[in-house]
Length: 614
Image 1 (cartoon, helix red, strand yellow):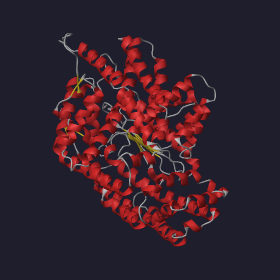
Image 2 (cartoon, one colour):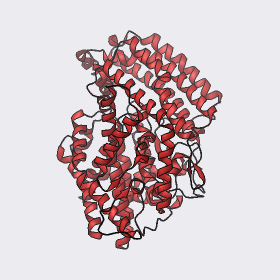
Image 3 (cartoon, one colour):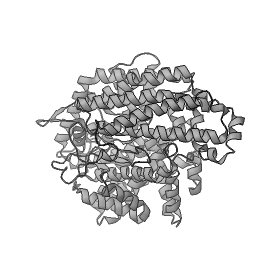
Image 4 (cartoon, one colour):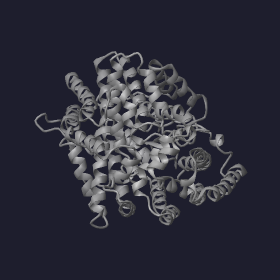
């Protein structure tokens, strides 16, 4: 699965001509082109192999010996990897241009073809889940099968929630015309939207970028244009959101999940109670973190405004939340500078980390320019271990873009290091997948902070980092709260755009505090957040990852000489260990409520330093 970086949280400012010298990815490492005979032949072979696999093993999994079951899993892994490679290729081509109808048709065609092929494979994990525990334990005595024990354990987490073979097959086949089709409608609608701002018709990515422009008039124009643009399309987005929430509700009911978030937690291999503890801790910290910081920022911006009345309670308009601080030089970073900063920061921590990162620049694995139709935001896609990851960015040359590069490169390095675990066991649960990315950001931030020479430089950099951390921890937890309320409300009937807007505004006011001023133009800003559509309840993984990294970094700062190697071992483990097992070598436990306070305390400490710097 691709790990998406939130463009709406990065809010990079557009920079004319920034595409100069930026790298484009080359997808021919996967297939020569969408019409290539190689891709067609691959799918034909996979279709034949899937039917042969079903003829060989269907109805027989429980009776296989440990050695034979291992052979079956190995064959399944190779087949699934080939299909995943084709699906990844189609997804990357589509991410490069969501607007071209021929590309959209290609993407849908591959999706339908792969979906049809994998229908013949559904039986495998279903039968694996129906093996009795005692019998499975006996089979795992074989060393060949023991190798796959982590994957088997993960697959069997869903054992209480599987349906009959017929029901599973029906749901699988209908996905492309159900939830998958609604997701595609969302993507295409977003990609086609244009926002009239200062005489230009801007796509959503560029419009959002203007929300961090130094000129308040531009920010205001962008905020109002975004609100008006989504207002025109809001019935479509409300229908997509409400329909997918109902679709999930039906699925959860049939599968006997207790709560809307439970299936996501299970796939993340994390207990409901741990996620509850995270959300409770963050929400309890709203006053000490986001409310406190935005009160400080409102004072800074209002003090810099002409005619500001010091007796008035300063407020921030919603379109000023990501505004640069007064006096911020808003410097531009060339691609070469960004690359050098990130690799130097990685190398100071671990030469091996930097060496793996260098491969992304030495090869055409990154797509950085902003262009019409390209998917907004940023992501790292692992593809498959037999190939390599790809990174998508929308690079504008701002400091936040440098941090986004550090973030996505962290994902990419993680995916490379975990690759030797094999296709089935290299994928990391979302909560831990965000660890490497956020840690890469922290390394880069600390390197930049060490270079500051004046209090003013330090203040600007600290403020930028605090805002990123608030966006990652507070905002994403608020998004999680929004999703929870939306899915709970959907039980009472279809949700209108007005209802969704009310839930959105209530959550924003609670999380961001009284220093933020929202008007009707902000009511529909929930509509462009892709995580709500593509991966429900994904968002808390960002908060989990940020707090986890803060706690990890505190251990690193204690000077343990073996930390870097243990950290790299953690990344290389991929999906073979739980969060309990991965954190134990560092003396950390995410089930301990005090764990979250450590991470939140780092953010509070930065805000305290900003208050002292004035």
